[in-house]
Image (tube, rainbow, N blue to C red; front, top):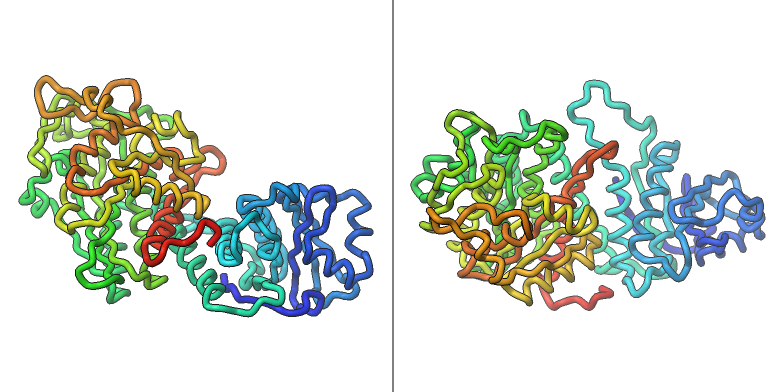
Length: 503
């Protein structure tokens, strides 16, 4: 969708629909009050009829009001005045966008960014409005032969900024919001594709296509022969049960100073995970196409970097494979040797994500990284601990962990830090190898991170377990695109002087 800035006299805005917020208790927001005055109390009289009280996400579409140049007026509930925050803004924006996309207006103007949410800046309000609008409009219908589409979808949304002047910051809000939204959409699209289409080779092809479109992005894809020469025995052991060859996708975005140390993002790219010989239950196994959401988020984040021309160097590494049962697949009790030279006893073949990640993390060291973040749908234990609201965060560096947490708060794509104490490391002890690939029943998310930490000792590292946040199940089944917003915000924060929390 196209986004533009709108300013001036609100009552004189000529548009197919004007969107204004109303607080709980039928309390008008400032833009709504301005229109009500222009219309000689029409809005208040309508509200007194009791059909609308301002609860978050509630909508009421009005037509042909006098004193206003707009054809329609959409009232949107924004909740309690004292509790209005960015989350309420997102919900109200999503509700308004959904209503208009199913109605007839091709364009509209929203005043919701003018409803102050705590100490959030105009930049944040505008950016969040774009992200929420795009989230509301997203549909995945690539695999449907007769997808039903809106007859007159919303194509343009004006962002009303009152009497404020357009500035470099407001322009950035739009460009950043669109880039983050487009990166999130790419991650969703890749994740929602079925495993028979989105294979490791397909992922590699999409990465190469991105590289061809940007001079700043160099893409290299390592095949199994090259990985074998590097000694990536852990990664290659996972793909042995599949007819699909594994790929190591390496994307180098060069937007920063020549020679400056890059941030490295490592995304788990299991395009389908049946569990291997330790096969998963059949119920909901179709959702294991989402085991590559970490890799998809890296592709989405790099796409956002390209679109924003971020002044930073970023490396994306995606180990991509399938994990299937086969006569040649890993067996419980097998011992493999990783690129680092450390041996691993495979006690459970369904704990394969850490096997492909550990070799990718060893490979990351060659780039002399300023920081490394890996992203993986790694453990069901993280879903039990944190549900679908926050990604699990573990790190060997407090400063890096705090940066990630701050980026999560700033973007609304939150994470929660769990401990990475040495006390947990003994759970990975093996009688026959340097370590086991699982640590028993307790603290599954932490012991998985402990395993990865043994391959990240040379650099600052953070691990994001997105098993609970990467997709929704049930009737709303689908990828969320997380943590593209968090990762993009993290990189934005690293591009220059650190922003205040309200910026």
